[in-house]
Length: 168
Image 1 (cartoon, rainbow, N blue to C red):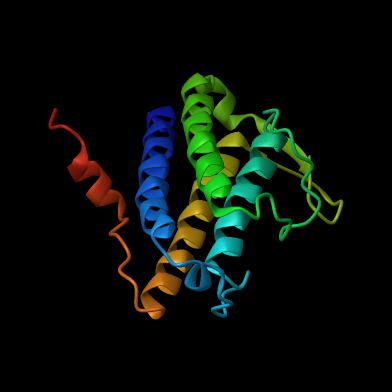
Image 2: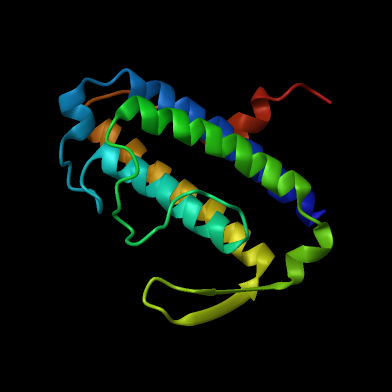
């Protein structure tokens, strides 16, 4: 049951990111890069942070991500197109990762060191919940930035994703 919920969150996450990415692809460069007062400044840097932290958590869960995350504001891609493409590719990999998880592993502790070197351990289910919640949090920031800059932002609520699914 819990595994199915995470599978839904993985697919919802991919859907919401794709909807938001369509809007980001159409923004003019100045708006996209403008420091709009968010925690990471611009839409680009917030979108970058979101992918960066996904990679950090995936790496902690044993996925080879191909990058060493050293700071939470590390820039993965300066180029918007490369960042959007990487986001889409990683969203597919997140779906695959969650699909392949052994449901019995969800209660197993995941031990890791935080960025400040402190050791922590939480059940894998809570780490996954954090990964998806972190996504929602920063997508919400990008959504707010778009709105505050006078741009239309797509509806991203989970219920809209569920309504977009074929009736069963």
